[in-house]
Length: 342
Image (cartoon, rainbow, N blue to C red; front, side, top):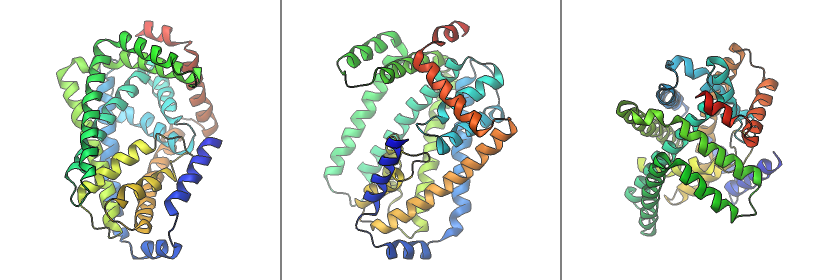
Protein backbone atom coordinates (compact mmCIF):
# COMPACT_ATOMS: atom_id res chain seq x y z
CA UNK A 1 0.00 0.00 0.00
CA UNK A 2 2.85 2.37 0.85
CA UNK A 3 4.62 1.66 -2.43
CA UNK A 4 1.34 2.08 -4.33
CA UNK A 5 0.62 5.37 -2.60
CA UNK A 6 4.07 6.70 -3.48
CA UNK A 7 3.68 5.64 -7.14
CA UNK A 8 0.23 7.24 -7.35
CA UNK A 9 1.41 10.55 -5.88
CA UNK A 10 4.47 10.66 -8.15
CA UNK A 11 2.33 9.90 -11.24
CA UNK A 12 -0.28 12.51 -10.32
CA UNK A 13 2.38 15.16 -9.76
CA UNK A 14 4.03 14.28 -13.08
CA UNK A 15 0.66 14.38 -14.89
CA UNK A 16 -0.28 17.87 -13.62
CA UNK A 17 3.24 19.31 -13.63
CA UNK A 18 3.25 22.66 -15.39
CA UNK A 19 -0.54 22.75 -15.84
CA UNK A 20 -2.56 25.76 -14.74
CA UNK A 21 -5.47 24.36 -12.71
CA UNK A 22 -7.68 27.02 -14.27
CA UNK A 23 -7.11 25.23 -17.59
CA UNK A 24 -8.32 21.95 -16.07
CA UNK A 25 -11.43 23.71 -14.73
CA UNK A 26 -12.09 25.23 -18.15
CA UNK A 27 -11.61 21.86 -19.83
CA UNK A 28 -14.18 20.21 -17.55
CA UNK A 29 -16.58 23.13 -17.96
CA UNK A 30 -16.74 22.94 -21.75
CA UNK A 31 -16.81 19.12 -21.97
CA UNK A 32 -19.80 17.27 -23.47
CA UNK A 33 -21.14 14.84 -20.86
CA UNK A 34 -24.01 13.61 -23.04
CA UNK A 35 -21.54 11.03 -24.27
CA UNK A 36 -21.80 9.15 -20.97
CA UNK A 37 -24.44 6.67 -22.30
CA UNK A 38 -22.05 5.81 -25.15
CA UNK A 39 -19.24 5.29 -22.65
CA UNK A 40 -21.43 3.00 -20.56
CA UNK A 41 -22.53 1.09 -23.66
CA UNK A 42 -18.91 0.46 -24.66
CA UNK A 43 -18.13 -0.52 -21.07
CA UNK A 44 -20.99 -3.03 -21.08
CA UNK A 45 -19.72 -4.60 -24.32
CA UNK A 46 -16.18 -4.75 -22.94
CA UNK A 47 -17.20 -6.74 -19.85
CA UNK A 48 -19.79 -8.83 -21.68
CA UNK A 49 -17.10 -9.97 -24.11
CA UNK A 50 -14.80 -10.67 -21.16
CA UNK A 51 -17.48 -12.87 -19.62
CA UNK A 52 -18.04 -14.69 -22.96
CA UNK A 53 -14.33 -15.36 -23.25
CA UNK A 54 -14.02 -16.58 -19.66
CA UNK A 55 -16.99 -18.90 -20.19
CA UNK A 56 -15.20 -20.38 -23.22
CA UNK A 57 -11.95 -20.80 -21.29
CA UNK A 58 -13.85 -22.64 -18.56
CA UNK A 59 -15.98 -24.77 -20.91
CA UNK A 60 -13.68 -27.83 -21.04
CA UNK A 61 -13.50 -27.78 -17.24
CA UNK A 62 -17.14 -27.05 -16.45
CA UNK A 63 -19.95 -25.90 -18.73
CA UNK A 64 -21.20 -22.61 -17.34
CA UNK A 65 -23.28 -19.82 -18.85
CA UNK A 66 -22.15 -16.23 -19.28
CA UNK A 67 -24.63 -15.24 -16.57
CA UNK A 68 -23.03 -17.73 -14.18
CA UNK A 69 -19.45 -16.47 -14.61
CA UNK A 70 -20.35 -12.76 -14.58
CA UNK A 71 -20.79 -12.32 -10.77
CA UNK A 72 -17.34 -13.71 -9.94
CA UNK A 73 -15.77 -11.70 -12.75
CA UNK A 74 -17.33 -8.39 -11.66
CA UNK A 75 -16.52 -9.06 -8.00
CA UNK A 76 -12.90 -9.58 -9.07
CA UNK A 77 -12.71 -6.32 -11.01
CA UNK A 78 -14.45 -4.52 -8.15
CA UNK A 79 -11.71 -5.96 -5.93
CA UNK A 80 -9.03 -4.46 -8.16
CA UNK A 81 -10.74 -1.08 -7.68
CA UNK A 82 -10.80 -1.18 -3.88
CA UNK A 83 -8.08 -3.67 -2.83
CA UNK A 84 -4.31 -3.24 -3.22
CA UNK A 85 -1.88 -5.33 -5.27
CA UNK A 86 -4.43 -6.57 -7.86
CA UNK A 87 -5.97 -8.79 -5.17
CA UNK A 88 -9.22 -8.75 -7.15
CA UNK A 89 -7.78 -11.47 -9.40
CA UNK A 90 -7.43 -13.84 -6.44
CA UNK A 91 -10.86 -12.82 -5.14
CA UNK A 92 -12.26 -13.82 -8.52
CA UNK A 93 -10.60 -17.23 -8.17
CA UNK A 94 -12.09 -17.70 -4.69
CA UNK A 95 -15.64 -16.72 -5.66
CA UNK A 96 -15.93 -18.93 -8.76
CA UNK A 97 -14.24 -21.85 -7.02
CA UNK A 98 -16.64 -21.57 -4.08
CA UNK A 99 -19.71 -21.22 -6.30
CA UNK A 100 -19.09 -24.16 -8.63
CA UNK A 101 -16.60 -26.37 -6.75
CA UNK A 102 -13.84 -25.94 -9.32
CA UNK A 103 -10.24 -26.36 -8.06
CA UNK A 104 -8.74 -22.93 -7.40
CA UNK A 105 -5.59 -23.56 -9.39
CA UNK A 106 -7.72 -24.53 -12.38
CA UNK A 107 -9.65 -21.25 -12.19
CA UNK A 108 -6.38 -19.37 -11.86
CA UNK A 109 -5.09 -21.09 -15.00
CA UNK A 110 -7.87 -19.53 -17.08
CA UNK A 111 -6.93 -16.08 -15.74
CA UNK A 112 -3.31 -16.62 -16.76
CA UNK A 113 -4.43 -17.46 -20.30
CA UNK A 114 -6.69 -14.39 -20.31
CA UNK A 115 -3.70 -12.19 -19.60
CA UNK A 116 -1.64 -13.80 -22.36
CA UNK A 117 -4.34 -13.13 -24.97
CA UNK A 118 -4.89 -9.62 -23.58
CA UNK A 119 -1.20 -8.77 -23.96
CA UNK A 120 -1.16 -9.97 -27.59
CA UNK A 121 -4.33 -8.02 -28.49
CA UNK A 122 -3.17 -4.83 -26.76
CA UNK A 123 0.26 -5.00 -28.39
CA UNK A 124 -1.40 -5.36 -31.81
CA UNK A 125 -3.56 -2.29 -31.26
CA UNK A 126 -0.61 -0.33 -29.89
CA UNK A 127 1.54 -1.22 -32.90
CA UNK A 128 -1.25 -0.32 -35.35
CA UNK A 129 -1.86 2.98 -33.57
CA UNK A 130 1.78 4.02 -33.55
CA UNK A 131 2.48 2.98 -37.16
CA UNK A 132 -0.63 4.33 -38.89
CA UNK A 133 -1.57 7.37 -36.77
CA UNK A 134 -1.00 10.56 -38.80
CA UNK A 135 1.40 13.37 -37.90
CA UNK A 136 3.62 11.29 -35.63
CA UNK A 137 7.41 11.75 -35.89
CA UNK A 138 9.30 9.17 -37.95
CA UNK A 139 10.92 7.68 -34.85
CA UNK A 140 7.48 6.40 -33.78
CA UNK A 141 7.42 4.12 -36.83
CA UNK A 142 10.60 2.55 -35.47
CA UNK A 143 8.84 2.04 -32.15
CA UNK A 144 5.92 0.38 -33.94
CA UNK A 145 8.33 -2.07 -35.58
CA UNK A 146 9.76 -2.87 -32.15
CA UNK A 147 6.23 -3.47 -30.89
CA UNK A 148 5.54 -5.70 -33.89
CA UNK A 149 8.68 -7.68 -33.08
CA UNK A 150 7.42 -7.94 -29.50
CA UNK A 151 4.13 -9.38 -30.78
CA UNK A 152 5.97 -12.03 -32.81
CA UNK A 153 8.16 -12.93 -29.84
CA UNK A 154 5.09 -13.05 -27.59
CA UNK A 155 3.22 -15.39 -29.96
CA UNK A 156 6.25 -17.66 -30.23
CA UNK A 157 6.64 -17.61 -26.44
CA UNK A 158 2.96 -18.49 -25.92
CA UNK A 159 3.23 -21.32 -28.46
CA UNK A 160 6.35 -22.63 -26.70
CA UNK A 161 4.62 -22.31 -23.35
CA UNK A 162 1.65 -24.31 -24.61
CA UNK A 163 3.75 -27.04 -26.23
CA UNK A 164 6.72 -27.28 -23.82
CA UNK A 165 5.27 -25.97 -20.56
CA UNK A 166 7.67 -27.60 -18.10
CA UNK A 167 10.72 -26.74 -20.23
CA UNK A 168 9.66 -23.07 -20.33
CA UNK A 169 9.09 -23.06 -16.56
CA UNK A 170 12.56 -24.55 -16.01
CA UNK A 171 14.04 -21.88 -18.30
CA UNK A 172 12.39 -19.11 -16.27
CA UNK A 173 13.54 -20.74 -13.02
CA UNK A 174 17.14 -20.69 -14.26
CA UNK A 175 16.76 -17.04 -15.37
CA UNK A 176 15.41 -16.08 -11.95
CA UNK A 177 18.38 -17.80 -10.29
CA UNK A 178 20.64 -15.19 -11.96
CA UNK A 179 18.50 -12.36 -10.57
CA UNK A 180 19.13 -12.55 -6.82
CA UNK A 181 17.58 -9.11 -6.23
CA UNK A 182 14.11 -10.53 -7.01
CA UNK A 183 12.19 -11.63 -3.87
CA UNK A 184 12.00 -15.41 -3.58
CA UNK A 185 8.25 -15.26 -2.95
CA UNK A 186 7.72 -13.27 -6.15
CA UNK A 187 9.70 -15.69 -8.33
CA UNK A 188 7.89 -18.64 -6.75
CA UNK A 189 4.53 -16.96 -7.39
CA UNK A 190 5.36 -16.33 -11.05
CA UNK A 191 6.48 -19.93 -11.57
CA UNK A 192 3.37 -21.29 -9.83
CA UNK A 193 1.11 -19.11 -11.98
CA UNK A 194 2.90 -20.34 -15.11
CA UNK A 195 2.38 -23.93 -14.00
CA UNK A 196 -1.26 -23.15 -13.22
CA UNK A 197 -1.73 -21.65 -16.67
CA UNK A 198 -0.93 -25.00 -18.26
CA UNK A 199 -4.05 -26.47 -16.64
CA UNK A 200 -6.36 -24.16 -18.57
CA UNK A 201 -5.01 -24.91 -22.02
CA UNK A 202 -7.61 -27.54 -22.77
CA UNK A 203 -9.82 -24.90 -24.39
CA UNK A 204 -7.09 -24.12 -26.93
CA UNK A 205 -7.26 -27.67 -28.30
CA UNK A 206 -10.75 -26.95 -29.65
CA UNK A 207 -10.72 -24.93 -32.89
CA UNK A 208 -14.14 -23.45 -32.06
CA UNK A 209 -13.09 -22.32 -28.58
CA UNK A 210 -9.66 -21.14 -29.71
CA UNK A 211 -11.19 -18.98 -32.46
CA UNK A 212 -13.79 -17.63 -30.02
CA UNK A 213 -11.16 -16.75 -27.42
CA UNK A 214 -9.06 -14.93 -30.01
CA UNK A 215 -11.86 -12.83 -31.54
CA UNK A 216 -13.37 -11.89 -28.16
CA UNK A 217 -9.90 -10.82 -26.95
CA UNK A 218 -9.53 -8.42 -29.87
CA UNK A 219 -13.16 -7.28 -29.79
CA UNK A 220 -13.20 -6.38 -26.11
CA UNK A 221 -10.10 -4.20 -26.38
CA UNK A 222 -11.55 -2.56 -29.48
CA UNK A 223 -14.48 -1.44 -27.32
CA UNK A 224 -12.07 -0.23 -24.65
CA UNK A 225 -10.29 1.82 -27.28
CA UNK A 226 -13.69 3.16 -28.37
CA UNK A 227 -14.33 4.28 -24.76
CA UNK A 228 -11.04 6.17 -24.78
CA UNK A 229 -11.84 7.83 -28.10
CA UNK A 230 -15.30 8.89 -26.86
CA UNK A 231 -13.68 10.38 -23.75
CA UNK A 232 -11.25 12.36 -25.93
CA UNK A 233 -14.04 13.49 -28.23
CA UNK A 234 -16.10 14.59 -25.19
CA UNK A 235 -13.34 17.04 -24.30
CA UNK A 236 -13.07 18.29 -27.88
CA UNK A 237 -9.71 16.62 -28.41
CA UNK A 238 -9.45 16.30 -32.19
CA UNK A 239 -7.20 13.34 -32.90
CA UNK A 240 -7.31 10.27 -35.10
CA UNK A 241 -9.13 7.25 -33.64
CA UNK A 242 -5.75 5.52 -33.94
CA UNK A 243 -4.51 7.79 -31.14
CA UNK A 244 -6.95 6.00 -28.85
CA UNK A 245 -5.12 2.74 -29.63
CA UNK A 246 -1.85 4.31 -28.50
CA UNK A 247 -3.44 5.54 -25.28
CA UNK A 248 -5.02 2.11 -24.80
CA UNK A 249 -1.69 0.31 -25.13
CA UNK A 250 0.26 2.65 -22.87
CA UNK A 251 -2.48 2.70 -20.22
CA UNK A 252 -3.04 -1.07 -20.24
CA UNK A 253 0.63 -1.70 -19.52
CA UNK A 254 0.89 1.29 -17.19
CA UNK A 255 -1.65 -0.10 -14.72
CA UNK A 256 0.64 -3.11 -14.16
CA UNK A 257 2.80 -0.77 -12.06
CA UNK A 258 1.94 -1.01 -8.33
CA UNK A 259 -0.35 1.84 -7.35
CA UNK A 260 -3.33 2.55 -5.14
CA UNK A 261 -6.57 0.64 -5.88
CA UNK A 262 -8.26 1.95 -9.01
CA UNK A 263 -4.94 2.93 -10.63
CA UNK A 264 -5.48 6.65 -10.07
CA UNK A 265 -2.50 8.75 -11.04
CA UNK A 266 -1.07 6.06 -13.32
CA UNK A 267 -3.96 6.42 -15.81
CA UNK A 268 -3.59 10.21 -15.80
CA UNK A 269 0.13 10.03 -16.54
CA UNK A 270 -0.39 7.45 -19.31
CA UNK A 271 -2.97 9.68 -21.03
CA UNK A 272 -0.68 12.70 -20.73
CA UNK A 273 2.40 10.92 -22.08
CA UNK A 274 0.49 9.22 -24.93
CA UNK A 275 -1.38 12.29 -26.13
CA UNK A 276 1.59 14.63 -25.91
CA UNK A 277 2.91 13.02 -29.10
CA UNK A 278 -0.32 14.11 -30.84
CA UNK A 279 0.00 17.72 -29.70
CA UNK A 280 -2.84 17.53 -27.15
CA UNK A 281 -2.75 20.06 -24.33
CA UNK A 282 -1.82 18.48 -20.99
CA UNK A 283 -4.86 19.97 -19.23
CA UNK A 284 -7.26 18.44 -21.78
CA UNK A 285 -5.48 15.07 -21.62
CA UNK A 286 -5.65 15.08 -17.82
CA UNK A 287 -9.35 16.01 -17.78
CA UNK A 288 -10.28 13.38 -20.38
CA UNK A 289 -8.43 10.74 -18.36
CA UNK A 290 -10.47 11.58 -15.26
CA UNK A 291 -13.72 11.33 -17.22
CA UNK A 292 -12.69 8.02 -18.77
CA UNK A 293 -11.51 6.54 -15.47
CA UNK A 294 -14.51 7.54 -13.37
CA UNK A 295 -16.95 6.34 -16.05
CA UNK A 296 -15.33 2.91 -15.64
CA UNK A 297 -14.54 2.93 -11.94
CA UNK A 298 -17.96 3.67 -10.46
CA UNK A 299 -20.12 1.31 -12.59
CA UNK A 300 -17.71 -1.61 -12.15
CA UNK A 301 -17.36 -1.03 -8.41
CA UNK A 302 -21.10 -0.66 -7.87
CA UNK A 303 -21.95 -3.77 -9.92
CA UNK A 304 -19.22 -5.74 -8.16
CA UNK A 305 -20.50 -4.67 -4.74
CA UNK A 306 -24.02 -5.65 -5.77
CA UNK A 307 -22.90 -9.14 -6.75
CA UNK A 308 -20.75 -9.52 -3.64
CA UNK A 309 -23.74 -8.56 -1.50
CA UNK A 310 -25.93 -11.03 -3.43
CA UNK A 311 -23.39 -13.78 -2.83
CA UNK A 312 -23.17 -12.88 0.86
CA UNK A 313 -19.53 -11.82 0.60
CA UNK A 314 -18.67 -9.00 2.98
CA UNK A 315 -15.93 -6.50 2.17
CA UNK A 316 -13.71 -7.55 5.07
CA UNK A 317 -14.22 -11.20 4.14
CA UNK A 318 -13.47 -10.45 0.49
CA UNK A 319 -10.14 -8.83 1.35
CA UNK A 320 -9.18 -11.66 3.69
CA UNK A 321 -10.09 -14.35 1.16
CA UNK A 322 -8.14 -12.62 -1.61
CA UNK A 323 -5.08 -12.45 0.63
CA UNK A 324 -5.53 -16.11 1.58
CA UNK A 325 -5.62 -17.13 -2.08
CA UNK A 326 -2.40 -15.23 -2.75
CA UNK A 327 -0.68 -16.72 0.31
CA UNK A 328 -1.75 -20.24 -0.66
CA UNK A 329 -0.32 -19.79 -4.14
CA UNK A 330 2.91 -18.28 -2.79
CA UNK A 331 3.30 -21.26 -0.51
CA UNK A 332 2.35 -23.66 -3.28
CA UNK A 333 0.58 -25.82 -0.70
CA UNK A 334 -2.40 -26.74 -2.82
CA UNK A 335 -0.88 -26.76 -6.30
CA UNK A 336 -0.29 -30.47 -6.30
CA UNK A 337 -3.64 -31.33 -4.78
CA UNK A 338 -5.59 -29.18 -7.19
CA UNK A 339 -3.61 -30.47 -10.18
CA UNK A 340 -4.56 -34.01 -9.22
CA UNK A 341 -8.17 -32.93 -8.82
CA UNK A 342 -8.13 -31.70 -12.42
